[in-house]
Length: 141
Image 1 (cartoon, one colour):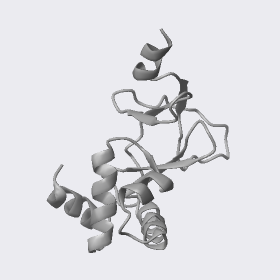
Image 2: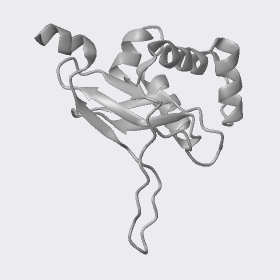
Image 3: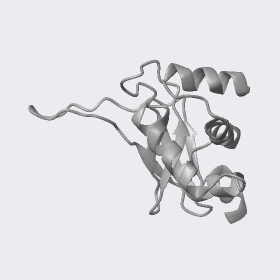
């Protein structure tokens, strides 16, 4: 995906592509994995923290990003390639490495269907597997 693709994705989700918002989306795209607010701040030293925070809030509201709780105590963000402006149909499993703290998307593994009892309505699913990533596993051997 190049910058124009990020702009198209933003517009599809009803987000005005300002310079800072494009920078934030590009940083998320280049990371290639879910990132924390702190990581975005490091990637984008020229962008004020409050601008990043407000942009992420707007992105969540417009379903442009997924938010997920990692295996630690943080929240991670990733670009959502949902086909819907109103809900997130881009669901997949995530893996959190307990050694390096990185979160990875396992996009080829769909989230298993969950049958809820009557009266419950799911709004999102966060399926997180924890363990050692391939790099950390090599270091242990």
